[in-house]
Image 1 (tube, one colour):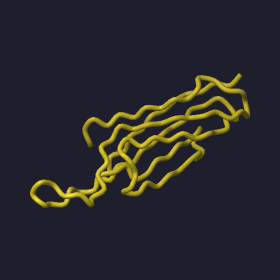
Image 2: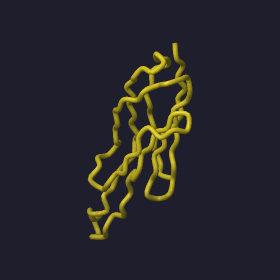
Image 3: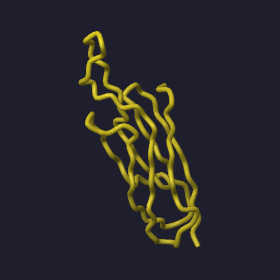
Length: 109
């Protein structure tokens, strides 16, 4: 598992049933494109978050495939409709096979 990886997610605590909310996510991750060389001339292996998904109560909300040109600490901001109370699950997939997950509950009023 990559060291110093920390996921942060901002989801409102509540929403109106059927309303749209803004979700913000950021994961602290040193990204390496696989195109740079170290001081000895050896290629530094690629190490990126290559996929990000968000689900709400098991339903896919967003699925993003990331390429080597993505910046360090990828940030996503997107909108989602909240039909009912439930839980968002955020998942980041790393090149080395590691998976990082965060969950956030939301209520409806």
